[in-house]
Image (cartoon, rainbow, N blue to C red; front, side, top):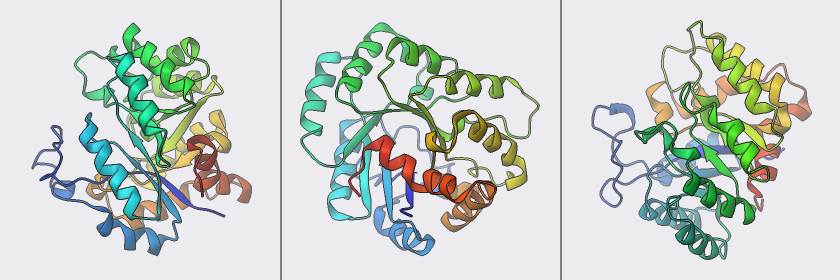
Length: 276
C-alpha cells in the first residue's frame, strides 16, 4: 500500500511573503522547510506527499516546484494562479503542465472579503480552463460561508474535480447540524472529494470529538473520494506529525483494508494523477 500525505506546506519567510502568517501563530510561525519534515514523513511510513500552496502568489508556487525538484518524496504540488484573469490562467497552465509536478491549484478563498468570491463569473471562466487541462481544484471551503458554493461549482463546471480541504472546517464540539447537510449536498456531485486534514489543528480536539464528522464524510463520499492530509506545519498547534498520523489511523480503523488503502494513498493517486 502506497501512503500519501496530500496536504503539507513549506515556507521560508525571508523568500516568500505570507500575509496571513502572523507571529501570534507561534507553533508554526517561522521557517518550515522540507528538510524539517522529511524525517517525520519517513518515520510515519509515508511514501510521498503533495505540497499545497499557502500564499496567493507565483513566488509560492515557484518555491514549491523547486522543493519538489530536490525532494523525491514530494510527488506533486498544488499551486496558484490568478483566477481573476482567465487569459493569464490559461498561459500559466500551459507552462506549468510542461513539468511533472504541478498537479492542481488552490486559492485562499476564505481570506477573500467577499464570501462569494469563488462563484463570480470570471473565476468560473478560469476554473473551466483548469478543468480543460484535467487539473483539480482544492477548495478551502470553510464552514459556513463557502461549503454551499461547492454544489454550485459542480453544477456549473461538471468536469472539474474538486476536493474540500479540511472537511470544510467542521464545527467540532458544537451542535450545528447544518455542516452535515452541506457535506451531504457536496457529496452528491461525483467529482467532489473530501480531505481528512486539519482535524487536529486544535489541541482540544480528540479522536472521539472528530469521529462523527469523519464517519459522516465516509458514509456520504465513500473511501474512494476521501484522502488523508496532515496539514503540517499548521497541525503543530494541535500536536505533532506523528500524533496526526496516529489519530488519523484511529479515525479510519473501522474501515476495511481496501478502504484504508484508498484513504491513505489510492484516492490521492487517482485524484491528483500522481506518478508514483
